[in-house]
Each structure stands twice: as structure tokens, then as C-alpha cells.
Length: 343
Image (cartoon, rainbow, N blue to C red; front, side):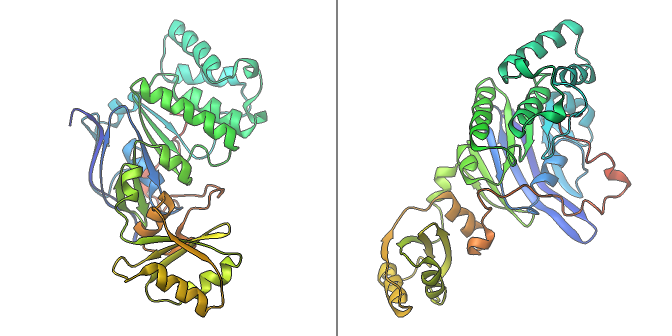
């Protein structure tokens, strides 16, 4: 497809008996921000590694810019920038030295390398930090340096693996402003995340669970396709209310949002509001019940099997390893951890 940056069909990766990615189909359009949303162990990192040629698929196929991976990985890699979960630049080098080194790795000519370094130092607010060692930077500063390094050679495709998991909210907002600017310039961006608010920013979104793609589409449209009636319960005893509601066979999931509960009810339930009120009264809990539109968290819970709070990525959760087979790699997988800002 000429308008697609990435096309994957039946993409699968196993580690021994473990199926880390299970028959994933993807079509990612050029010049858009495409998101992967899912908990640790859902297959996000493993999928990204296959899409940049660092891991060989066990089955299925992946094409980037029309070229099959990993067969044409060496031709594709100069067009890709890959930023890993963990900061992977050299902590003992200064900001400028890291960018200079990356420019040489990308085989950039001296004049262009100098121009791009100056441009990215200014673009990512690193001018005043250019003589500072990378190991002394804050989380947000490291993030900006990693993005400056990974975009130094002006890649057409950016693969970002949970890039904002360890930074403050303001740095996250600034980071996303930079991503939108890149996308408007024609860069295709695939970003994995734990955060619901970040997932809502994507042009399109795939929800992964246990290695499978369980939902895909425009975030706002996904909310209208949920297979449940969503009710909101406001109560001063949310934990007791949740226990009362979970005893009802018509309730599929209950998620607590502060003093409110989002209750997902089987769509075939007659008068769901009345039944929820009755369940609360039976449990000795008072509450206000009203029907509401599904939010993205509700979509996630429904798509991953109505497991309630336990299934929802925590808003402030720290990033964890997403490659469940990291200790089971064979000889063909050497170098799979060498991604990130380092090529």
C-alpha cells in the first residue's frame, strides 16, 4: 500500500512455549501517530522490535515502506529512528558529544551533521545543556536528548517504546507537542504507552493484550463500539459499592475513578440503572447512578476481557519489561537489546 508506512500480516513471535505476539495484523498510514496501548507483557516491545528488524518473526510478515523485514532490514534502518524504554545514550559524554557521535554513526557529512546538531539543540531546548554530561540530566532532559538523537538523521519513521514512562506531566506534554510537529512534517510515528491520555492523542490506536490485537481504530470511535452499557456511580463508599455491584451477574466490570465508579453492564440487561440501584441498596450503599458515554479506559477494560481495575494500566505506573521472552533468545536474536538511540 503506497499510503502505508507499515503493513504486518499474521505477525507472530514465540520464545520457547511462550507466544509473545500472536498473529497481529497492522496497517499504519504515513504521516500519522499510531499508538500501542497495553499492559506490561502485552507484546508492545516485541512487536516494535520486529518492525525495525531487530527480531525475526516466528511467523507472518512485516513490510516497512514496502520492504520486507528482516530481509531488507539494512535498507530500512537508515529511514527509521528507534527510541527504547530505557535511556540508551552515553552517560559519560556531554549532550553535544552524544549528538556528534550519533551523527557519525548515521554517516552524516560534516556540514549536514553540524547543521542538524545545531537545529536539534535549539528545537529540543538543549542549547544551555550541550556541555553537560548526559548522566547528570533530569528525566525530561534525557528524554529530549534521546529524541534529538533519534531524529538527527531525519527518519521517515519513528518507533518510540514507552518514551514518557519516567518523566513529569509537563515534560510529557512538551514531548507530545514535538511529536505532533514531526507528524505534521510527514514523519510516521508508532508509539507505545501505558497512559490513557496519551493513547487519546494518537490518530489511530491498537490495544494489545497477551500478545493479541484486541481492538483497533480511532480512539473516539472505539468508545462508541464498546459491548456494554456504561453507568457512573457516585458514592462516598466506593469500595463497598464495588463489592455490592460485583455480586450481580449482570455486571461485567467495575472500575474505580476516585469517588466514582464506572460500571459496565451487559447490554441485554433490562433497566440497567434500576438494577444497579437495587444492587447498591441490597449492599447498604447509597449512590447516584447515571448512564454515561464510555471513555478509553472503559474500552480498554472491555477489549481485554472485562477484568476491571486489575487490567487497566495505572496512570502513573512505571514502565516494565514488555519482552516476556527476554531470557529465552536464541542465536538469531542477538542484538535485540541494542536498539534505542544507539543504532
